[in-house]
Amino acid sequence: MITLSELAIYPIKSTAQISLTKSLIGPFGLDMDRRWMLIDEAGLMLTQRKHPRMCLIKSSLNNAQLTVSAEGMQSLNIMTPDPQKLIKATVWEDTCRAYDMGNSVAEWFSTFLKTPARLVYFPADEIRQVDLDYARKGDITAFSDAFPYLLISQASLDDLNSRLNSAVEMKRFRPNLVVTGNQAFAEDNWKQIRIGGIVFNLVKPCSRCVIPSINPDTAEKTAEILKTLAAYRMRENKICFGQNLLADGTGELKVGMEVEVISTY
Image (cartoon, rainbow, N blue to C red; front, side):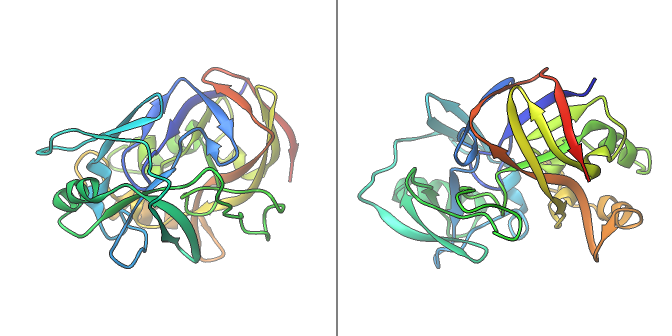
């Protein structure tokens, strides 16, 4: 039997994950996943690709209040967004309305990252359409790169680790859903699955950037992971690991739920 073995969110894009035992499914994906993002002075997203230290920023949520912490910094409670402070924030090619979380919050992140950084929040009424080449009109996401969900199977990571000199943890690959009980890379062939009554469509392999090379505990980089993946996971000149998903409807996911494969390619 295939089961859902891990759930994770990343409240602030490109910062550390929060592991969950259950999560509501909402219009943007898992509840509170990538609803916040850091931007530079031009309003462009900041990510680990250029700022590896972002992986060292940890978050916690208590009734939707965000608290952040990092080594050498005092913990910071971030209050509810002020709807009067709307600015523009850009994720790749998409420019969205976003709430500016204020100067004191910006100072905290700028100090830790040693670069100008402002925190913004994705409004509940903002629409960021998922690429219509893979989605239907009305499929939306917040500040994720492109899709609201990423799924990877534990067997696929185990396969990769069998080829590495030093095993790595799943959190390097930043999935929302991890499943167990299937063969390595079986998810490549899944077209539609059901978890806890919620149907997910697997719409596109996830092409990988440099982020899996970054140790999420130290922010140090190693070339071995992507070099190894490139030897056997190249698809159309891109390294692919994991599958991007869209959900039909809303509900709740819990670790331990059965994963039913409805259809395959």
